[in-house]
Amino acid sequence: MGSQAYDVAHERRSANYKPNIWSFDFVQSLRSQFTDVVYKSWAEKLKEEFMHTLNEEEELSMVHIVDIISKLGLSGVFTKFIKDALDFIASNMNMTTAGSKDDMLKTALCFRLLRQHGYHVSQEVLVHFIDEMVPCKEEVGYDLTTKVLELFEASHLAMEGDEILMKAKHFSYQYLVDSRHHQYLNDDNLSQQVTHSLKGPCHWRVVWFDVVHQIHAYEKQVNNNTNKILVELAKLNFNITQSMLIEELKQLSRWWNDLGLIESINFSRDRLVESFLWTIGIAFEPQYALLRKCLTKVATFILVIDDLYDIYGSLEELNCFTMAVERWDSEELQQLPECIKICFEALRTTTAAITDEIQREKDCDDISIYLNTAWGDFCKGLLSEARWYNTNHIPSLEEYLRSAWITSSGPLLSLVTLLCTTDNESDSLKDKLLENQDLVYYISLIIRLSNDLGTSAAELERGDSPSSILCYMVEAKATEEMAKLHVKKIISDTWKKINKELLNASPKQQPRVNLIINIARVCQFIYREGDGFSVPNKDTRKQIKGLLIEPIQLTMD
Image (cartoon, rainbow, N blue to C red; front, side):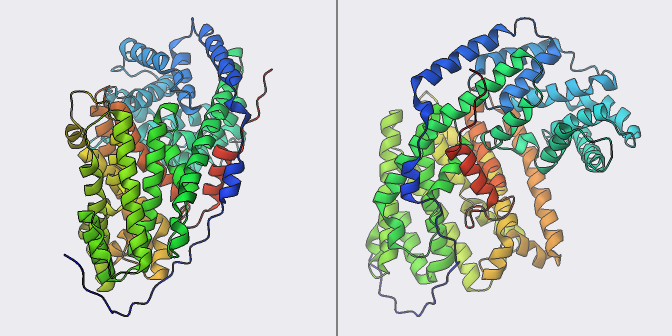
């Protein structure tokens, strides 16, 4: 059914977004010497040398090595070693018997690593340490701080009902905050570790965004040949991975340039490189090239469509656009501005191309219904929020979140992640979507609430649709600061549910589960210092330079 012509005066708004700072020519000029096969051969040699040094490692050393390998971005290089080491630790450590305060570092580290990798470990293993530590909270010292730091990290693996871990989190957080003011903490490495952890625990961090920091931090601590080899391998692996990512970015830059969409619209953010950064955080390993490619394309369109609904379109235009996306039929758009029609055609063409590429690469059945439906749901949610804006309606927080978890883009990004990592085995895609639906909801909440925390001030100033901050302020008659604390508590509580999903995932499911969780981790990073998409801030620019432009200097001959 065709749409009637609309002759409605509508004032086009502007978000005054900053222009793209990464030009097409600049991206195409990026080069890396580490594409040469000689570097891959060198990396293999370093891996062999490292493995030869691990024959007689003690349990404590082994668990530290697993932790270091993970933080240095080498988990994919040492997958079998990590699994064998954690199997050994889980089966040989007496995880039900608490030891003395001297064992706290080892036990807390083992607890964190085992839970992060899906091993069932009771919080009870930490109870005696906490009972011993709380009376000593006034004590301050280097050794004690290192143990409390690891306890703080372990506490972020809590699930609902883990009251012991909640007690550990409260105590360790306060201890670490207070410790920064003590004179003894003059060790730069430990001081930086404390500050880094308080800013964001490792379980919430994006591994690849943190890897350069971890390489430089660990390099200062190396004290034997094993560690030196590991640091050099981490540097080389980073540079090799960076060279691969540069080539992928250049290819995507050519696609975006050839599409020419951004030249046809004047209301949207042009953020291809930032979108690619997001996908690197979700999956940086070589085997996920298809996922990065498809996610980047989807992410660029999420921004465009979001800006269409938030900034440009009238309610009548947006209603037509939503119906067009639901039906994948441009007939509804005939009377709308040319830029909206161009936007729809670009979305439809790109979605069809993504569908074809996934089906070809994965040798799977028609998946178009899944992507088409997800885009339709996304647009319907945005339309609801546009109605709130146009009618000056401020919903309750509960009503807001019923729509906002969908418009967070979490379901859409999670769907693409599942589609690109399907193994085409007996369990159907429908089953995979069903078994991950709770996890997708949880990570979508974190995406939306983290976004709101980072963008609420600018959105209030522009008069955009209400955010969770404003909804709670009105509903609870709370101050902005109180509302932000409430939202942060929801995020923290949601992580407990995510931790349960991670722990309940089978070994086969774990890789996909971790990829979906990474979507939330990336979002928390992007919005931790404000809106890292709309305003490419210092953190975002620094990450792009560090991960895609500047290699790490090698030290060994």
